[in-house]
Image (cartoon, rainbow, N blue to C red; front, side, top):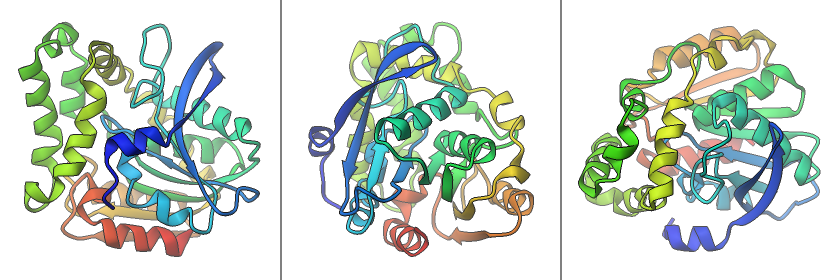
Length: 283
């Protein structure tokens, strides 16, 4: 998929949603041939944004209604202070977005902390029909050391320095991809773009601080009744394949596990063709 992050941003819609008593801007990509049917909602993680799904969501939109929101504090969504952007709050945002578009139920395709939000919603309600989980935050797997470091005191001031910001983003994106970095140039540029403004740098720190292990350890994983596909980057050292195997056991019947080789944490980018085919077959 050759779409630039500028083009993706230009296609986004923004809605004001009430979440935890706050009116917050939520930006989302929307497309699809069947806008009357249950949507497929794509949820990214930290520190990405909905541009992560540029190679998958448009393909699914050929047959289904697609939504790909920027989580609270990410991308083109609200980034200021004064609101929660934890996994629990992101779950509330997803449900508010479904209400906004008039969708009683949806299928969710989720990565990283987006997966934590998806699991919470699927365990708590019957609004999730199908669930694709990729290298998601679950159990006590989160936050990893890099994200914990972003939330340390004084980090907002440190990230005001361009070189420090670039060093952090290069570590998490450029060095976290499988194969030749030149093959991922568009991805890396797109992932960096939202974090350049001063407000966004502060928001990145707030997002890191908001990662909360309690919000995934309290999930009743056995209560998830949605048909589930665990589509996992097999070589991820952040959210390892062991967590996928544990989820398969706990969610139980109706759960399939597909491990994609030659893929780290950014499995959507590392194996785009295989990832897209698996999602299309499943949803």
